[in-house]
Image 1 (cartoon, rainbow, N blue to C red):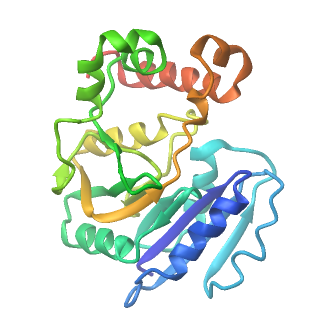
Image 2 (image 1 turned 30 degrees about the vertical axis):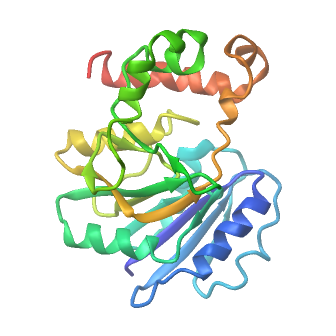
Length: 259
C-alpha cells in the first residue's frame, strides 16, 4: 500500500467532517491508500463519517493520549509506505496529497515533506520555522515579544516568500507526509505541542531532510487554543497552556538549550 492517512479526533466532529469531505474530493488516482481515524476518547461518534471510505479504520482510544499518542495508535496499524499525519481542522486542496507524495517518492533523502498552509481566507499561514531558542516561546506568548519582533520574524521565516520548495528546520504538524520506513512514531513525552518540532529534529539528527513544498496547499483552521488567554491567566485556567509550557521544558531538556 502506498499511503496511510492518519487523523486524530478530539471533540472536532464538525471540523473532521469537512476534512474527510476534502479527502473524498482529492485526486488520489493511482495510489493505494487507507484512512485511519483515531477517536481520542472525546465522546464523538464518528462511525457515520467514515462510511463513504472503502478502506477505513476507526480506532477508539479509551483515554486521551494527546496528539502524539493518538497518532501513534494509528501509525501502529498503518500499512502504507508513507504516512500522512493530518489534523481534523484541515481541508486539503484536490492535488495537495499527490503533490507531496510524488515529491517524497522521487527524493529518497527527504524524510518529511509538508505543504503550504493557508488561513480560511486563503492568506498565508506561517508553517515552516527555524528551531526555537529557549526564549522563543516566551517572546511569542508574552508582551516581551513586542520588543523582540526581529527574533519572532526570524523564527517564522518571514524573510522567505514561501513560494519555492525549500529545506526547513521544522514544519507545523497539521499536515506532514512521512516515510514509513524507520518512522517509529511521535515521542509521547509531548502530550500536546512540540511533538512536530521534535519529530522534524529527529529527522535531521539522522541525516534526513525536512522539506516545505508550496505547490501543495492545505487550509488550516488554526485556533491556537493555548494562546487565547493572557499568559498569566492561561497558566492557571488553561490546561493547554500548561501543556505547552511542560512540552517546552521537555523539548529543551531532551535536545539541550543550544541549537
